Image (cartoon, rainbow, N blue to C red; front, top):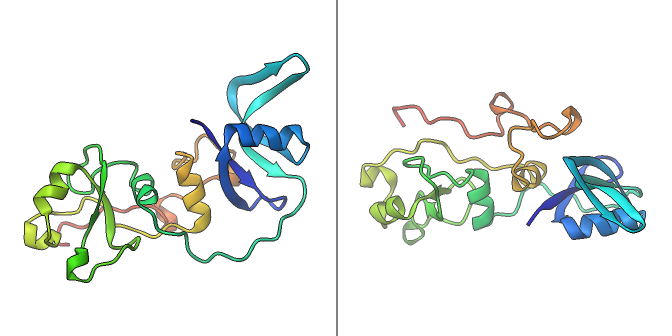
Length: 181
């Protein structure tokens, strides 16, 4: 199922919505299409619009300030691109670096995506105790980065430069862990 990014009138990312909801916003003249999927169009008897990837609301919507992106299992998998932090294979689970039974919590900095085999092998231990090494360091995405990551557009190539996601130099992307860690 495709999703579209919803921007406020000020171009601030607000949320992601289903493709159907994005089309309804455009048809009701509540939003305009800022970025569309290349070559894809929705056609009907009296309708011909590009398939929206990013829509911008016509009117500004006041939202409370969010300092932090809410933690979720899906968010951790999306942040880590569904890649295991221990071996790099496809990840299907979330692993706690410091296990919950040892006081570790459900936080961005204490959880990483993991394949079932590595999650089982690590069990109720820290990576150091299990003799395992993290390939990437966990990080906490900003609320805006979390929205763009949820769309699967981490590299920023599919978006115009005014919506580009900062790369590793800006400090908001995963960085390799040094061998001494």
